[in-house]
Amino acid sequence: MNLKSFFVGLSLLLLTACKDEDVISPVIITDTPSIITSSSATLRGAIEVLGNVGIYDYGFAWSKEENPSTQSNAKLLGNEAMLGSFEATIDNLTPSTQYFFRTLVLTSEGVIYGNQQSFFTAATEKINPTIQTNDADDVTLASAVLKGQLIALGTAKINDFGFVWSTSPNVDISTASKTGFGELVNPDEFEYSLTGLNQSTQYYFRVFADTDQGLFYGLEKSFKTLAFPWRRIADFPGTPRVAAVAFAVEGKGYVGLGYGEGGVTFKDFWEYDPDKNEWTRKSDFGGDSRSAAIAFSIGDKAYVGTGFKDTAYDDFWEYSPASDQWIQKASLPVKVYYGVGFSIGDRGYVGTGLRDGTLLKEFWEYNPVANSWTRKADYGGRATDVAAGFAVGGKGYIGTGNLPLGRSQEFWEYNPVSNEWIQKRDMYTDRWLGVGFALENKGYIGLGNGSPNDFWEYDPIANLWNATTPFPGGSREAAIAFVIGGKAYVGLGASGYPFKNDFWEFDPHR
Image: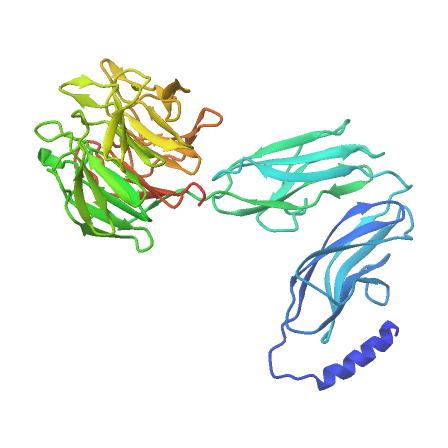
């Protein structure tokens, strides 16, 4: 059947078509061709809206005259039209000739054409350059590194090459942002650091080469900038305080103890439900009110102890969220406060801190099954208190803290298998009364005395510190943190008066 017969039949169908609903026509666009030779060209287009009419075929029309139609030359690609880009190569073209082309769809409502584009065929057959768009790298809140490669020059002279990018797909050099590197002689990989981007935004980009044989593009790729990782959640409903304790058990966070303005100490405990963004008061701590205590969780239980009120404490208590009950367990063999606590596997660990005005290096392991404490190798760094710590990858980490003269930036790793401490890369800044936590396979330390509102991410494999997004709640000391499901929750603390009760969620993958 020729095209004329086809449209006669199509017209008859239109006369009897049902008109019960509004007609939504397809929306199509015509893109610039990607490859042009002296006798061929690769035409490109896209279907952006399918509409609700029947699509019988789609493709391109082209001609040496403007506004080509199906009566000129047409290349149809079949009736399985889908959203997105499509392309087709046409050949048997005349060298050094201008051609016009546009996309088309054959529908039950007739032929619909896209916008018109044009190109010139090359004077003689030449080998076109081969260019490639690679994936973007180092994507942040406001930046990304675009990467590309000129694999082969061909016979073309490249006058300019680089990247074009936009927040809309089908990036075109005439409408998108562009960076060019100038004339190229040898094929090579290249990249461009793109800055000033909007957070949580999809960007599209591709490489281009502007040559004496025409303009060439690589395939289009995209990336999405990161979102701001911090989000304020419901404020802590108890009295604002510092030097509290926090832990997480089975998807809930728990906060308690600490001291408020005027030095009053607390024994209340509160549960945070991240799904409901709600706090609920739970049973008070089983021991005396206090601050500067230590907490860690093992399985479905948590353990809280040590600390200071009018004297240092050595008692330890087990908390069961299921029964909301506190049970006293074996005391730590020594009294201590402002130490560091964390768990590795089925053991808890407590180390460093202060006793009778003396800074400590002691390090202890708790076995909840035997309900017993065992002294382990002393902390590898200088004696300290108000340090920060966390456990990740089966190892424990303690760093920063208070020294007899000044603040520490030391950082040490504990191996529970060999019972050894290994010094790791120092933090870039010293501090005490900071806060630490672990997320997935990274550790984090931030805030504290000597720090504004910074946070640092530690990579145990690379043994490197990298600055991450600052804490938006402002500088403070003696804050606390707990981790639930790949997110950290940081709050309380103080930077002068009044004391804080705000809480913030940190999600590095937001």
